[in-house]
Image (cartoon, rainbow, N blue to C red; front, side, top):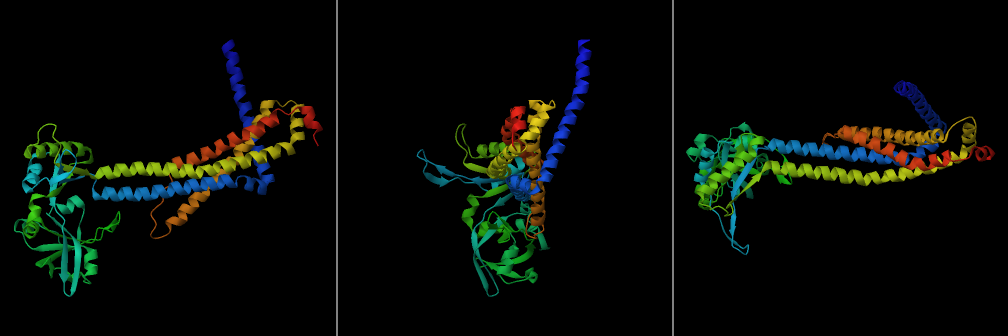
Length: 422
């Protein structure tokens, strides 16, 4: 019987509470509509705060997505292995460790976790074409695997071939920025340029890749590494190389295999530090993801301070509203309304008021993001659902926090005093 009584009360309790809740919401909307200007000015701080949050988060996410996609396009399963500088016990640089083509071939042959390798050294050179001369140009000496590893593809002519590498052919591939600075056009393909006085035939033009972290990726020349070491023999002993792992999930495995092969070839004893370094492309991506989360949190936190200003405005207006409606409170109490009914009514009005402000702010944030995306050089902004839910939740929370004082003040008014209030 006791259980039935509990169920009976529960069944009838919920509809009554729901009806009371929706009644309070309707009353709050009526009050907002009856005092439109005052309500708008009251929630202005909430609107600005939420609009700022949505705008900041959407722009940070949009630029973050653009940068992440860009990094993924460079290859997140990429490692760069390079000879390190050897130091003495005081940390002073002694000499640079040696790494040659045999090291690269050994890694290529003995590491099942990697897909391909490409040697690399990058001297600065001068290039001449016709009457034009450019100094300090970035030269990349590598092999045919450089193209798939680094995603540098040609859109005119061809890339370096295996035959070019093995025969040490004096051919080169030219970037678009070099082409522009040489004041040349695509007819340069099959024509000749001079690199540090050596005659090279241009076999292809790289497609434009744009800038990355302030570096123009179109301002480079690529030649076979076999030709490069003839021109710059010292580079033979200090070759760095690119490694492409079989997949993003096999980078750690490939790193371990490379370390084992190189340590063995360099006769490094257990406990002795590596005389080579490895840079992983996904390190940049992971660091950037951390920076993006921190930047989003900090910026959203800063603009959230204006929510406090909006909340104080709501509290002031609700206190005025309680003073204006004191007789209404007295009448309600005289016909049986309890303290919690009055508390619930005014608290609901504060929450509805701040939530309406939050909704307007979200709409304005979407509008700003939409119009910003129309600019041709603007990246696509991204408004994650979590930011919308967070902004709406914070605005409702501000209504509860700053509405509790006026609501409690209204709840404790004595009905006789309330009815005598003028």
